[in-house]
Amino acid sequence: MKKESKRLGDKLKTILKLLLTALAIFLVFRKIDSDQLWEIVKTLNWIWLVPVLILFALSKVFTAFRLNRYFRTINLYISERLNLKLYLIGMFYNLFLPGGIGGDGYKVYLLNKQFKTPVKKLIQASLLDRLGGLVAIIFLLFWLFLLVEVQVEFLETTLWNGLMLIGIIVTIPLFWFLQKMFFTDFLPSFWSANAWSLAGQMTQIICALFILWSLGISENILAYQLVFLLSSIVAALPLTIGGVGARELVFIYAHTYVGIDEATAVAFSLIFFLISALVSLCGAFIKYKLPKAEN
Image (cartoon, rainbow, N blue to C red; front, side, top):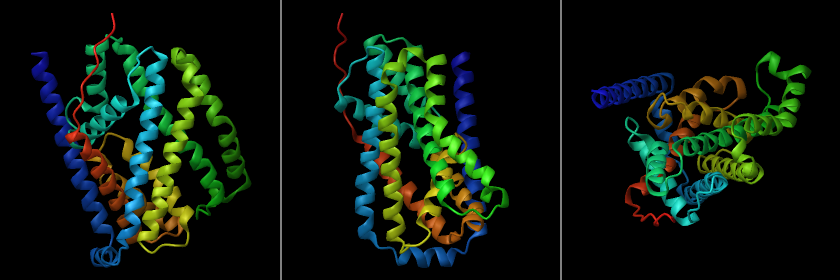
């Protein structure tokens, strides 16, 4: 009975996500000129997307290293090669199989079954992995809010700039305090894991730069990157399939405040999603073999 209820719940969540995705995509294309978007795509300089693909994949290698730092803190030792394979499989599950167990849940199940690592510790490691990525984005956002002129009166005040400076100073210490309070066992990996978080997010910012160049954008780069980071937070919420539609809506509604082109912003967002989907799809073809747990 419980299994049937869970399956029904998963199906309902998937249907809801599909509906929200369809609604978000409808709102996006209702807001923009489809002909203008197509013209932008036709003039795309595809050669710049080669380094985008490489750098995006590299960013995921960095974040996989971050997760393995957490694993090793709880005495779960798997090779970086195996960890990367499981990470890519998890990306595939998260993007293409959104209604079921999910990528994080699948890894928790496998590692608990094979190595008998407590489920609670594995869930904490997965949660910290997500939080580490979010903290890196927030830290970089504080910098960009200082550098980008936003057409909102309050965001151009001395008070706001002061708050951004405070944010830069306290973000990492606050995250350390949070980890000390609720994830004490993982403290030894704090600095190395967060270094990999920043490396991964900075690599994606460089990805964003190359995508903009492929679209012929050479001005107002930091504004696009600011909205890109904001959209990354929204896309991470489990509302739509792979963040499709949600990310584009952020670009649509933010363009008037930071002076970016609406159709170009949507084209940028769609290209980034396609790159992400292509890398995630690799997880479907990966074969792995878990080593035997030591007694």
